Image 1 (tube, rainbow, N blue to C red):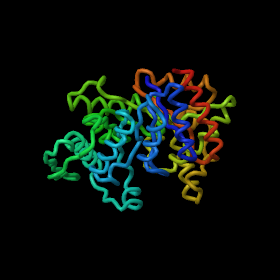
Image 2: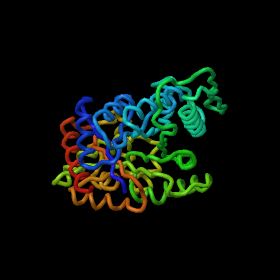
Image 3: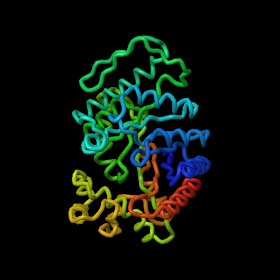
Image 4: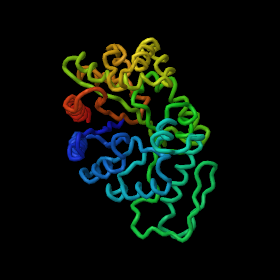
Length: 339
């Protein structure tokens, strides 16, 4: 498996330093999310601060930008990074699209598939001056008289799609270079639920499993005291457990009652980032890579033969910046040991 990392920084300077340290430790790709920052600016910061690691968005929201803007940003980031950029896209959820961004939500699987096609077509032909025309149900391109006057590093930039449900996961396997899991993704859930959907998508498109990168995301918390490691990651588990639509995921792990307690606390007024006290240690243990360094290495090995790439990230919900900073230091040490 490739070991990759999602660096954290309270400032962009700290993010750059963390990315450089992770690259030096052996992380093969550095990933940036999109929530409290736009994904594209931190990706550019990391590209400038590093020289060998891939730079990926995990993920950039696909529907809040036009396909042309997404393609232009990808081309610029590929230039800044010297051909190291990976465009990771995801749909987000209805509430975020409609309430936060004012974007109409309709048929997200088809829309994301057509968005990928539009981005690819623009990247491949924008330097030629040829007309660009794609007609889809959700996304279309009709461009004439346009030619990008700047050099293009690659005319095909890898696109990865984040997916949770079966339809989006199958679509990712049909059209993308890779798939990115949710932040909580156990080896059992990956093997029993997600990989069959991926195989169905690949088979339907006549693709080989070896041509597709399965990226599993894993919240990682390391401490010499296992309970301290669990408590550091509990807030992140609580944040996602407060979402009712993840009920099937928690039920799969035998955690339906535990999620119910979280939902009840959230409904009673607890903030989504303040639910760690409702999360028992065994819930953290099943859903994250938490514990001593030896325990985390053992649990990481359970993804062997299932995932091609592991994206490690430090916990951030419901803890101080200093706690996240300490978690990050231990993960980068682990990456150095692993690689």
